[in-house]
Picture 1 (cartoon, rainbow, N blue to C red):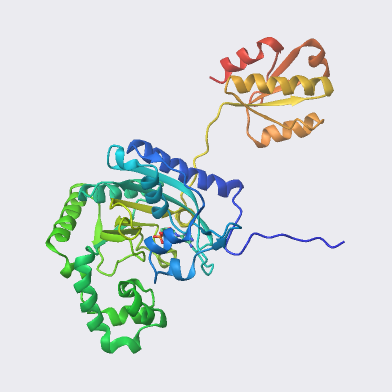
Picture 2 (cartoon, rainbow, N blue to C red):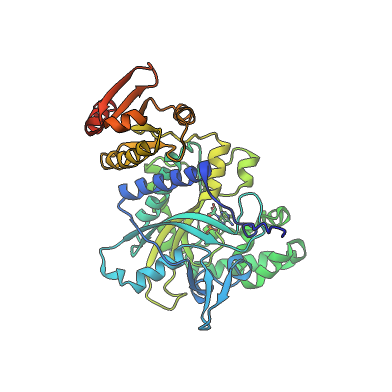
Length: 425
Ligand code: AMP
């Protein structure tokens, strides 16, 4: 019978071993930041109603048009694997009555997201994101703090030279005039832009601004800039955000072409990335976010929010590219070697005694050869090894071997935990 080799679906990958340690490091760093700024973790379902994203992210966006994994349940519900985190968090805020909590409600999340994209460097069909959201407050101070938190997170992960790109895309009112101006600017240039942008010109003209196609970028040279169309309130909001950033000494570049792909953004939008090497640039932005209001699009309560999300795969690729190392945890640990059936039983029990005292025990408990077990202890660079041979098992004793000096000591089994605690304090 020929064997079948099963593989992960296109654009998806297993995470294990050293790779998993990188993911753990990113999550732990985000958790520390979240604790400091008093963000509570939220975990929402992987599947959500398709309408949630069509209405919030918006028709005409790549996510909605091309990238959603959709499925119909037996009950005929149309669900999708979540492509992003803000709409689900907003849904959870409304659904769970978080408006009655003290505002802003500060939530963070970490989990897998799904987009049906063409797999390439830095782009997967299942990827992990960490996100932070402030919900229920429209003050520009939170736009600035969202950027500060994102910046702090990247610094704590070891990225010292990142740059904030920032823009304001105003509110719906400012955008009406701006869209008209952009439309007339592009009127006699439609033949010069890519096929996607031709479509966008009718559906979602702002999306043309962040098209990565170099021809489209050339055409846009000299295009009107949204910043010149901001209404007085939006202008004032943006001015405050920039002042807060300056006060906090956060380096930023104004980027008039930054609009971010999703419909729900209003006013501040930002991305943080590198402008260092082509390799880093090619991986795209590390993190992006902005201010949003999903209430109107979702036909529910109007709730201002601001936040960001960070792609974990890209962060990890860049950690490796920048040779950022994971620190090895220095644990208090020992190795137990056993020879013979009675010794095996005693060792199994002893491991439990050490667990209760929070002392980590390594073992190779299925092995019978003393040499094999000692070799493993050596490989793990463990200094304190406990040996229970056949004689020791009968005598209720344990040998403590110091692997550095080679010195050995015999201790009664009932005293062993106390003795080890003394040694590895
Ligand atoms: P977005 O929700 O598109 O603003 O993306 C936020 C961040 O998620 C980006 O800056 C990327 O780091 C990451 N990201 C987005 N799409 C993907 C993908 N297909 N594969 C891996 N990371 C992604």
